[in-house]
Image 1 (tube, helix red, strand yellow):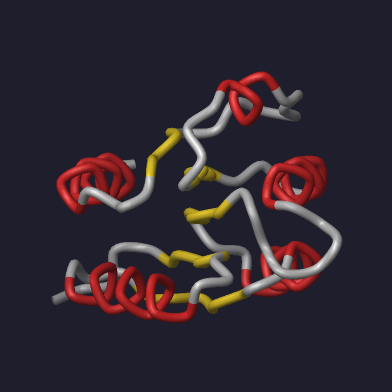
Image 2: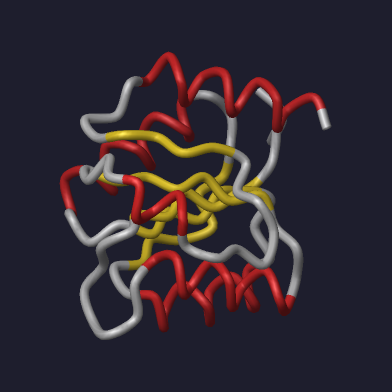
Length: 123
Protein backbone atom coordinates (compact mmCIF):
# COMPACT_ATOMS: atom_id res chain seq x y z
CA UNK A 1 0.00 0.00 0.00
CA UNK A 2 1.50 3.40 -0.95
CA UNK A 3 2.11 5.93 1.80
CA UNK A 4 -0.83 8.32 2.14
CA UNK A 5 0.70 10.96 4.42
CA UNK A 6 2.22 11.41 7.84
CA UNK A 7 0.51 11.84 11.19
CA UNK A 8 1.85 13.19 14.49
CA UNK A 9 0.02 11.91 17.57
CA UNK A 10 0.10 14.12 20.64
CA UNK A 11 -1.43 12.22 23.55
CA UNK A 12 -0.20 11.64 27.10
CA UNK A 13 -2.16 8.42 27.61
CA UNK A 14 0.27 5.82 26.25
CA UNK A 15 -2.30 3.16 25.39
CA UNK A 16 -4.49 5.65 23.53
CA UNK A 17 -1.50 6.99 21.59
CA UNK A 18 -0.30 3.51 20.66
CA UNK A 19 -3.77 2.35 19.59
CA UNK A 20 -4.25 5.44 17.41
CA UNK A 21 -0.75 5.03 15.91
CA UNK A 22 -1.44 1.40 15.06
CA UNK A 23 -4.77 2.30 13.50
CA UNK A 24 -3.43 5.06 11.23
CA UNK A 25 -0.58 2.80 10.12
CA UNK A 26 -3.10 0.10 9.18
CA UNK A 27 -4.80 2.73 7.01
CA UNK A 28 -1.56 3.40 5.11
CA UNK A 29 -0.33 6.52 6.90
CA UNK A 30 3.11 6.99 8.42
CA UNK A 31 3.32 7.94 12.08
CA UNK A 32 5.70 10.90 12.20
CA UNK A 33 6.00 10.53 15.96
CA UNK A 34 4.33 10.28 19.33
CA UNK A 35 4.45 13.06 21.88
CA UNK A 36 3.09 13.42 25.41
CA UNK A 37 3.85 17.13 25.91
CA UNK A 38 2.99 20.32 24.10
CA UNK A 39 6.59 21.46 24.01
CA UNK A 40 7.74 18.23 22.38
CA UNK A 41 4.81 18.38 19.94
CA UNK A 42 5.87 21.84 18.75
CA UNK A 43 9.45 20.63 18.18
CA UNK A 44 8.33 17.45 16.41
CA UNK A 45 5.85 19.30 14.20
CA UNK A 46 8.63 21.63 13.09
CA UNK A 47 11.16 18.89 12.37
CA UNK A 48 8.87 16.13 11.03
CA UNK A 49 6.41 18.36 9.13
CA UNK A 50 3.40 16.01 9.43
CA UNK A 51 0.34 16.29 7.19
CA UNK A 52 -2.01 15.84 10.16
CA UNK A 53 -1.77 16.12 13.93
CA UNK A 54 -4.08 14.41 16.41
CA UNK A 55 -3.80 16.68 19.47
CA UNK A 56 -5.16 15.89 22.91
CA UNK A 57 -6.16 18.96 24.93
CA UNK A 58 -4.78 17.87 28.30
CA UNK A 59 -1.12 16.91 28.09
CA UNK A 60 1.77 16.24 30.43
CA UNK A 61 3.76 19.37 31.22
CA UNK A 62 2.85 23.03 31.42
CA UNK A 63 1.68 23.54 27.80
CA UNK A 64 -1.74 22.17 26.86
CA UNK A 65 -2.77 20.96 23.42
CA UNK A 66 -4.58 24.14 22.47
CA UNK A 67 -1.51 26.29 23.14
CA UNK A 68 0.70 23.78 21.29
CA UNK A 69 -1.69 23.76 18.32
CA UNK A 70 -1.63 27.55 18.15
CA UNK A 71 2.18 27.64 18.21
CA UNK A 72 2.40 24.97 15.53
CA UNK A 73 -0.07 26.88 13.32
CA UNK A 74 1.95 30.09 13.55
CA UNK A 75 5.10 28.30 12.34
CA UNK A 76 3.56 26.08 9.67
CA UNK A 77 -0.16 25.72 8.95
CA UNK A 78 -1.02 22.06 9.56
CA UNK A 79 -4.29 20.16 9.74
CA UNK A 80 -5.00 19.52 13.42
CA UNK A 81 -7.69 17.37 15.01
CA UNK A 82 -8.38 18.21 18.64
CA UNK A 83 -9.20 15.26 20.90
CA UNK A 84 -10.56 15.64 24.40
CA UNK A 85 -12.23 13.63 27.10
CA UNK A 86 -13.71 16.92 28.24
CA UNK A 87 -16.54 18.00 25.97
CA UNK A 88 -17.15 21.33 27.65
CA UNK A 89 -17.33 24.56 25.70
CA UNK A 90 -14.00 25.77 27.11
CA UNK A 91 -12.09 23.92 24.42
CA UNK A 92 -14.24 25.28 21.61
CA UNK A 93 -14.13 28.84 22.94
CA UNK A 94 -10.34 29.04 23.21
CA UNK A 95 -8.76 31.24 20.52
CA UNK A 96 -7.29 29.50 17.50
CA UNK A 97 -4.63 30.69 15.08
CA UNK A 98 -6.51 28.62 12.50
CA UNK A 99 -9.63 26.56 12.96
CA UNK A 100 -8.90 22.88 13.66
CA UNK A 101 -10.00 20.28 11.13
CA UNK A 102 -12.23 18.61 13.75
CA UNK A 103 -13.00 18.18 17.44
CA UNK A 104 -13.27 14.56 18.62
CA UNK A 105 -14.45 13.33 22.02
CA UNK A 106 -12.95 10.45 23.94
CA UNK A 107 -13.43 7.59 23.81
CA UNK A 108 -12.38 7.90 20.18
CA UNK A 109 -14.86 6.68 17.59
CA UNK A 110 -12.73 5.14 14.84
CA UNK A 111 -15.45 5.85 12.26
CA UNK A 112 -14.59 9.54 12.82
CA UNK A 113 -10.88 8.76 12.36
CA UNK A 114 -11.70 6.92 9.12
CA UNK A 115 -13.53 9.97 7.78
CA UNK A 116 -10.67 12.32 8.69
CA UNK A 117 -8.09 10.02 7.09
CA UNK A 118 -10.25 9.63 4.00
CA UNK A 119 -10.42 13.42 3.60
CA UNK A 120 -6.67 13.79 4.20
CA UNK A 121 -5.87 11.04 1.70
CA UNK A 122 -7.77 12.89 -1.03
CA UNK A 123 -5.95 16.19 -0.62
